[in-house]
Image (cartoon, rainbow, N blue to C red; front, side, top):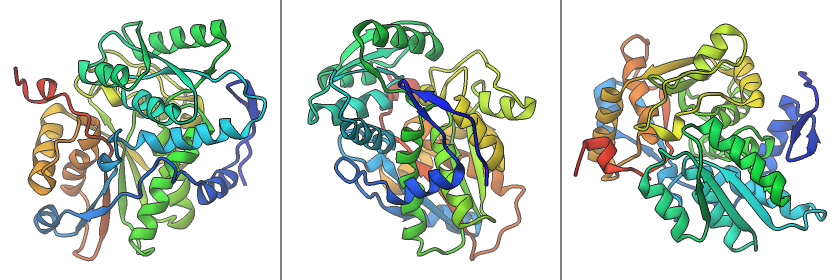
Length: 339
């Protein structure tokens, strides 16, 4: 049993152990805001590669079109359960999908939301947050700079900071995706699951759940070329920053991974692979042929990594491999240079 030191999130100390995470993921109820999304068999891809390729369709989450709604739904449910929370103000550092999710959930809970985004954030995400009622502040040229600005604002107005990834509640909420995948496959063995990594919350949550119920399953993180801070941190045994960052795959473009997510991934992740723009675009096109949906680059990274992995892995026709369609808030100008 692994125990870890006290962590501070939003002023509240938490001691989180892997078994406790697993228990919370089993019990987590995010149904107020989260749809149980399909697990689709990608038939053409499966036939081409010679094994079963599934896609978890969190691009179909209503309104937000992103898995981010899972962690946010759980986080806000925990805030609502804390009677001492009297200031209904939230400050959210985000490149887009996390903010969209917070604003969507907060509207029905009575929270006022201030969103701090890097200046390079795509117009589609800035406009969506604004149209949903969030106050948007563009600050900083990077995620770390906008996060620092958000922390200052939260302290100034005595609001609750809702961090996009370095928060146990966010990790627990995201874990409901892995829980659904296992249930939808009726607990059949999964050979590998590919998980995009930005700050690392989704990869942490998937690894925490999958490694408990299916220890032999390979949990493989996926990062975009030039944004592989988790891979480099795991190689060096400490959190390291990495620049330059990408506006193409902005949802998984972070200079630093979280302290908590690094700790979890260091123990449970099997590998991290890096994909390039050409591979991601090919995956977006392949997914569109299957589902008639244009994924955002971060949402297609998982499928892009599968193509790379399949060239060196030994698989048979009964193997199950899972990819995650994480988001569909695509900026077509960025992807296809459409003007």
